[in-house]
Each structure stands twice: as structure tokens, then as C-alpha cells.
Length: 259
Ligand SMILES: NC(=O)c1ccc[n+]([C@@H]2O[C@H](COP(=O)([O-])OP(=O)(O)OC[C@H]3O[C@@H](n4cnc5c(N)ncnc54)[C@H](O)[C@@H]3O)[C@@H](O)[C@H]2O)c1
Figure (cartoon, rainbow, N blue to C red):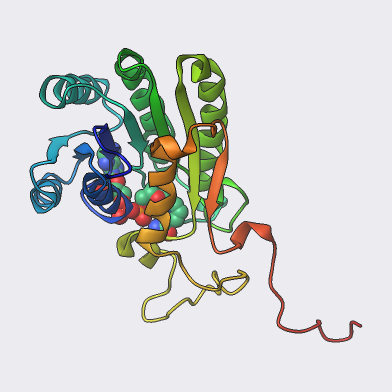
């Protein structure tokens, strides 16, 4: 018996990376899944690869009309909605001084307004099934700061605030809302943190208790837990999957001159 047996889910940004891996795992655990993305060819291929439990729909998370159509389709073709994973996001790295207003606004629209529109559209469908789970994908950059990630980090912090408000508003209707804060994801996004040809030229993972990027299946395991009834008493919280990134900085030895 799968951990999501009989559940119906929408996963945004599911054409690749964390979203695709989440949709694949959800189906393996007994769910039927609508994969949404703006990369139509990859999204269709991902759904086909998962099999009959999956279908693809173009779902630009910034579009109210696309959200309406996705909820309508998941209700008509799959029978309702139990789980929404707001995973789609975009990343731009630049010093704040050199961040254009266009980039700032684009990140807010996709990463912050997208999950808001998704939750707003999904609530009536979740309510109609007697409750459900919303999993918003934030980041370690939603738990702390990071050079050159000002716009991205701002959106991921905002998502944690939105999550808390939604959890309070919806708890009495048995709708739970949480964030996952990963340190790691798709190769495409992880590559943007690295200098070309370097394993980790920024030293970005070196401070961690577990000094590496997270693997997709490690991140998906937490998304699955929060989507499933196993997390029935968890709401309004953040769940880092970060190898200890947010717990502090590792030092191999005392700094010179100390001790
Ligand atoms: N990769 C990492 O290191 C990392 C770390 C922390 C958090 N995250 C978060 O994990 C989530 C998944 O990221 P990933 O690593 O799989 O990256 P990714 O770039 O491979 O996946 C993001 C997906 O979102 C889609 N997308 C972009 N704009 C969209 C839109 N307007 N509407 C619908 N879909 C859209 C993209 O096409 C892509 O398929 C994101 O929320 C990201 O911020 C990633």
C-alpha cells in the first residue's frame, strides 16, 4: 500500500528536477498527479515516463487562467485534489546594486505570487475533499541570507510567511500548509551556484555539517512526508533538508591565533 494511495496531487514546475522527481515518487506511492510547467515538451515527456497515473498540463503559475484550468482538469479527470506542491521557481544571482527591476519583479511574480495564486485556486477543491496538504518549496535561502541571492531569498522568506498565515486560516478545515527548505535540487539549478568547471567554487557547501548538495530523492522524501497523512499533526512549519546548512558553520580547526 503506497503512502499516497488514492490521493490526487498537483505538482508545479514538474517538467524536470525536484518537481519531476516528486511527481514520479507520488505516482509510485499510489497517487494520481497533474504535472504543471511551462516547458511543455519536457513536461509531456515526464508525464509519459511516469505512466497512466500522470498527466501534463501547461500551468504558468503566474496565470490565474492557467490555475483555473488546472483545477478544473484535475477535478474533472482525476476526481478532485488532495495535495498541492508549489515547487516552480526561478533563480537569478546578482548583487543587489546590479539587480534590475525586471528581474526583481519576475522572481517575485513566479516564486511568490505563483504559490499565492495556486493556494487560492486550490483551497475550494481541497475543502471539497474534506482537507488536504499544501507543500510550498522554499529554500535554505528562505532561512538565512546569501550573497547575490537578494531577490530570490526575499521571495523564499515571503513564502514562509504566507505559509504560516495559510496554515492558521485553513487548519480548522483540515488543510495543512508547510514549507520544505532544501539545499539542493535539479542539476540545472544547482549548476547556477557553481563556477563553470568547478565542483563548488563558491565554497558554498563547505560550511555544512554534511558538506555536499542534497540529492533529489532526499528532498522528495520530505515533500512526500508532508503531503501524506503521516504528517497529520504538522502545519505552519518549515522543514529544512539541508545537511545542517542552517544550523551553523563547520570549522575544521581553531582559527589562527585562537585557543
Ligand atoms: N536546486 C537547488 O539548489 C535548490 C535549492 C533550494 C531550493 N530549491 C527550490 O526547489 C524548487 C525546484 O527547483 P529545482 O532545483 O528542481 O529547479 P529547476 O529550475 O530544475 O525547476 C524549476 C521548474 O519550474 C519551472 N518553472 C519556471 N517558471 C515557471 C512558471 N512561471 N510556471 C510554471 N513552471 C515554471 C521550470 O520550467 C522548471 O521546470 C524551486 O522552488 C527552487 O527554488 C532549489
